[in-house]
Length: 360
Image (cartoon, rainbow, N blue to C red; front, top):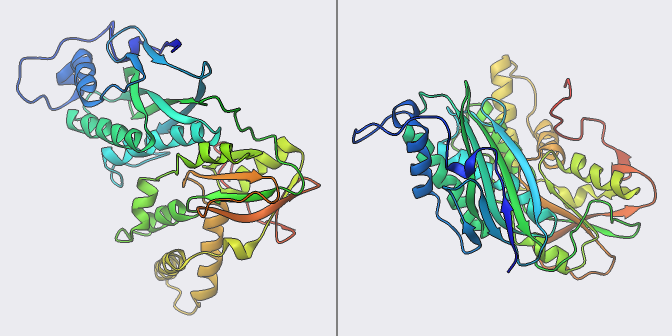
């Protein structure tokens, strides 16, 4: 097997050039007390090495076996106050979400997720126990995908920031790009739509008892659906991170085609409708309005979650007409001549999804 030397920012969670050894105390409480070397040593114990890891945490860089000879690579940020809140999410939740974001990108290329590099910047008063729970969340989500954390970096910062690099193995397959959709193709999705957005809305409304909240805190991408789609001849694929309309818009733009979605195939399920009604009722209560009807606005809200919510990290792909798809792939539209994304032949009047730099 060929080996690739994967070099990280500062010594692959090892060989840190600054910091101090841990103090002789039985239960360090913060990163300042355990020190950088102590944190790296603890991370090494919390994050197991995988079978493809030839050199893991503790050296200048990790070495990963890549039988295919090619590496799929992607990077994502997770920033406190922007992507997560510690009063809403546990450290394990943050670890699961941080891993899912990058591993889903690998799967969307048709690759098998293989490894993560995780850079953590944190304030010195962060409890060591929080970092431990974060590592366990990362490891647990990696286990779902068949991947492992092989290295990273640590630094001091005023707020928590994670930068996660995902690496994937194509296993001899061609990568599935965004640019291959052609008129006549089917558009299909594997995984839920709108659940993470519903969970966020419930959190914002203070309605934390719904199981959809857990789907926002810990999305569960169908990682194996990516290589499966590649094997079925998928012509284009993307993970739904910013919203179905926004992400399919990337495929439409890259492919020079139009995607026409069928709203009947995207009708929100009972769980989303119930959540939308609860959120709508909460908003009316907060505004003091007791006169409005919840049913129709709730239906609209639930459909908006499906079309523009994002963060489910489900996979959307296009396939040649006539492709026999496994049951988990639900056909939601077709590819046609033209440009952009339409719903039932009409443009969507609202923003199609999340844009980090949009003023909206």
